[in-house]
Length: 241
Image (tube, rainbow, N blue to C red; front, side, top):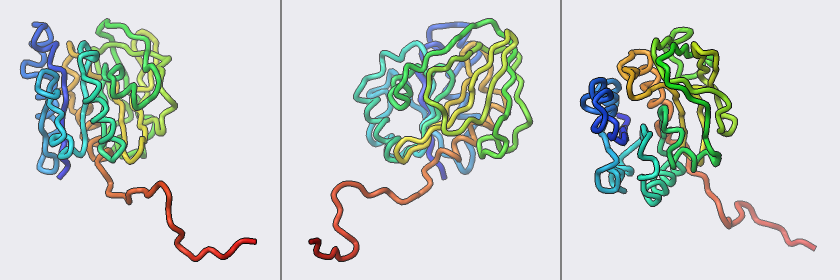
């Protein structure tokens, strides 16, 4: 059983009627319904909850954290960002969606500005699978087509991904590295581009399949914890002249 926490600001849905019409219960609830299964236990957390819903107890019981944020990045407390960062370094998986590229936690983990081109014009996005052997691409067709999405374009100011799984093409001509993996400490991170709040992207079965696959990939593997610091020799050390 993989324990997943879905974090969402839950601001657009409260304040914007157009967004509320698409996600009446919030993006987090749409994702929870879309990825929950007998093998995935899902809970949700939002910005306005105490400690943003990401208490020590919640994070200690989270294998994979999914993060969607946009208009409230600056309202996330630095102490909570540090807490999440430490959990990732200790082995918790992190999946960052769409405008979460500008979140404090993603920028802290990347060490870069994470800026990009953007345009909201409801244009077609074609998400190409460029690493079909990767577990996150399991069960997918050659590409995913979204008829209406916000454009993100290069240059995307991130470190070179450890693995590139998806590349997007947009109707207006831009391309974007839309599915990137990174390893930080013992944790695995996946950034996935689509998911603008005014479009029903998180109801798309293929998009949900990507996120389901990413949850399984990012979950802690049980690998040995590295040992660091001053260390006693394993074998006798002979006297040196």
